[in-house]
Amino acid sequence: MVETVWKATSKPSPLCTFLLLIILCILGFYSLHYPHSTVINPNAQNALRFRHIFLSSASNYTIASYLRILTLHPHLAGTAPSLAIVNYVVAQFKSLHLQTHTTQYKTLLSYPTHSSLSAHFTNGTVHDLSLSDSSDDVAVVRPYHAYSPSGTAFAKAVFVNYGRDVDFQAIKELNVSVKGCIVIARRGDLPRGIVVQKAEENGAVAVLIYTEGEEVKGFERGTVMSGVGDPLSPGWAAVDDGESLELEDARVLKRFPKIPSMPLSVRAAQLILNSLGGAPPPEKWRVDLRGVGPGPTILNFTYQGEKKVGTIHNVFAIIRGSEEPDRYVLLGNHRDAWTYGAVDPNSGTAALLDIARRYALMMRLGWQPRRTIILCSWDAEEFGMIGSTEWVEQNLVNLGSKAVAYLNVDCAVQGPGFFVGATPQLDSLLLEVTKKVKDPDSEGSTVYEKWAATNAGTNIQRLSGVDSDFAPFVQHAGVPSIDIYYGRDFPVYHTAFDSYEWMTNNGDPLFHRHVAVAGIWGLVALHLADDSILPFNYLSYAEQLQRYKVFLSNLLGEDKAKVSLHPLTTSIQELVSAAKEAEDEAKSRY
Ligand SMILES: *[C@@H]1O[C@H](CO)[C@@H](O)[C@H](O)[C@H]1NC(C)=O
Ligand SMILES: *[C@@H]1O[C@H](CO)[C@@H](O)[C@H](O)[C@H]1NC(C)=O
Ligand SMILES: *[C@@H]1O[C@H](CO)[C@@H](O)[C@H](O)[C@H]1NC(C)=O
Ligand SMILES: *[C@@H]1O[C@H](CO)[C@@H](O)[C@H](O)[C@H]1NC(C)=O
Image 1 (cartoon, rainbow, N blue to C red):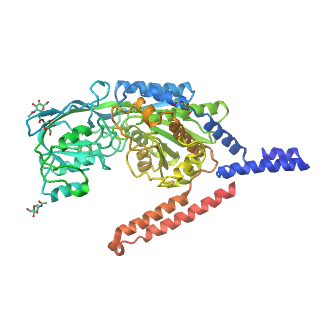
Image 2 (tube, rainbow, N blue to C red):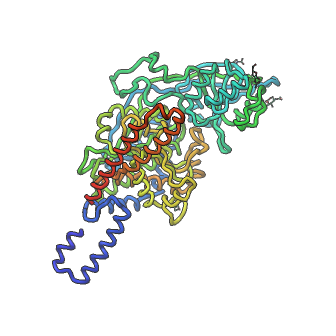
Image 3 (cartoon, rainbow, N blue to C red):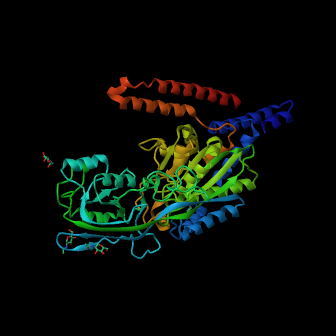
């Protein structure tokens, strides 16, 4: 555009010079706000124009209508209603004329067949602690822990706080043994499977886990399998005719706990815990209980479940890149839910579908990304990131060399407040993009401004957890990744109350937070797909490594003399020089 102006005015008049100055000022303004775009490159101007179209074509109405349809029925992975949602997502992508692709895997899943729980109190009464969130909702799977072994137990109840090592140690110091007992634990930071494993190591015969919180009601379902992916095909994809381990194989069995467990409602937990005798709880547990047990209350526990091979479906929409088609920018969200899944995960699915709609609109207006964009809709995440892990295993070599980044959104909207995790080379891009997106909860502010004003500031978490589909990408394929969400710790997590009604009454009544997540998610992807030089910042990565090195050094304490951190120091220095060199070269190309 600028070149055309020069050609048209061989002898620039004062007016033209003035106009040109104004144009340059405007372009300079944009380039300040988009440090990765270039003023003289017409492609960059085009990309900028399409980013504006992307943001201005947001619609809270379409997101709400996607979510309404996605959450009409519960859609647990491997069940018939989940197939209807697969078909819905495929139909949406196809109706937008996006190239659509589905992959299927046969993987080991787990469902309950029967369960019961009752408490026998010392006054002679027996309470049936009926295991259902609400008696009239038969469409929702009964509360269970996927991959728990079947089993019965008739034994004294004992409370173990969060079930951590320190908690079992504290119990021992009270001279209380959990041997032969049914352990009750409240949900903390430990994965469910680890709590069950620790209870088993201490001799317990069964485990009940409940979730605390003023607004919490119902039962928190969840998996107790350790590790990620299909247990019958560890490390390789569960494709048709592929190798599959036997269920009795030690490599399979080690992924599951050996004692049975179930979720407990907070109300049932209170009833049991208030009836316990024995030693009073350690002060640091901060619980108002007479005793931790064991007993005198006795629990009658039965869980029957089946593990069976089922078919799961990943759905993809592909937008081929014009200049670097072999480089992929991946946006992923899982589709399967324990119940209705309005928050977990379909707030993310609704956002993904709205991004698809807007990208399709941009394509009709002439946009094609420089690099290939792939929208991914995963299955069976709730069982242990199975859909995404199988796909990563199947495409490991390709992803290692061709994936630019993986951008995950699971529970897009859980309430107010912006949260994000990322591998550090994406920090700067994230900060820039949040400056372009309107804050959903305060008129006239950007997401960045509200985020920076929080106590933690613009804190970007690291993706060290194994709790969503970014895990196989980061930890197995080594792909730079991001995980975005609004709000956290929502009270209906994995319960039958995670419904569209909860979303419209509590999570996001006007669907503006959904719009913000979709905006940030889609805009980060557009930069990664369209910027001529990838917007990675490895200085930020080196800084993070440096901080971890200091942390490690402090952890070593007195052992510092025995371990040399010198190799770490030199590699971090090498990374800093390489990052600076890359940055200087990138700047010289603008
Ligand atoms: C636990 O038992 C030991 C040994 O019998 C005793 O010394 C200690 O005081 C007991 N601790 C508590 C908290 O009762
Ligand atoms: C028996 O004990 C339980 C638990 O403390 C209590 O909920 C129940 O009301 C008691 N029943 C009677 C008849 O006292
Ligand atoms: C425990 O519960 C099961 C299943 O509801 C029942 O069949 C059994 O009789 C109960 N056991 C006792 C000792 O009450
Ligand atoms: C979308 O946002 C507008 C403006 O705040 C609001 O009036 C409308 O109710 C919202 N639509 C939905 C479906 O929430």
